[in-house]
Length: 253
Image 1 (cartoon, rainbow, N blue to C red):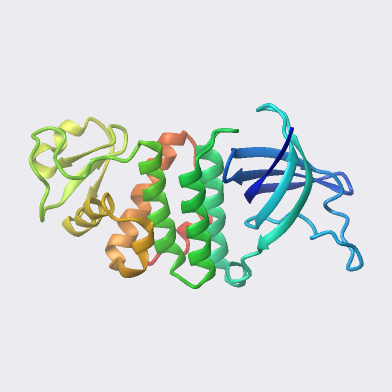
Image 2 (cartoon, helix red, strand yellow):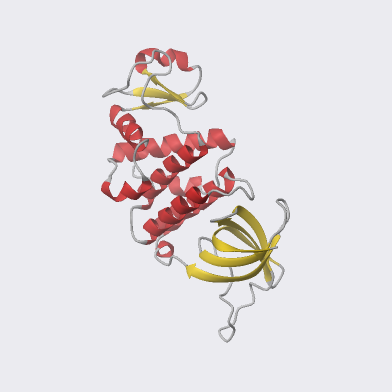
């Protein structure tokens, strides 16, 4: 069966002297593994769009294969190479982290159109010069909500008290927030968040990614949200993402 659609390149490795193996996140079919035969053969005189590149937004045609088998890429055209992202290492690191996160949090052939739109929107904003750290934090928050794994930062898990204008302790293992008087009930390692960070986390539950340009994080909030999301995803995935060490160097100190 031949399938047509849009895709973003999540991963890509060279395979033989002429071919590549890639992981696409598609609008209609979700994550798809493909082999691109001859995609490394590029000449200025040919009609080939060139080698597959990470981050590229493509129109694709491929021969469908069951999950676990590589589909065969028939043809593709580059819709957007996102050159603005590639001009700055901080932008590259954050964009590649987002790609790795999507790859690790999804399974093959599980259509998630809303996630595709959120991913594309995030990359476009980094390409257009939006603060890449802020885009990544918004994306991580959106991804948790789409996965159904977003914690509730509104009330203390133990006493049920609303957390308004006060710091709290987030339990990474229990995925819940505790007021400081109840912190002993968290039963494990936790991360203390100041009142401002908790306020932003509560607000993010109702904020769409499209409103991101109207929101700015104070430095302390940026640091705490970055640490929180990084450790929370590490707990969910039971692994540290490879790009984490690169983005951690770039967070405001």
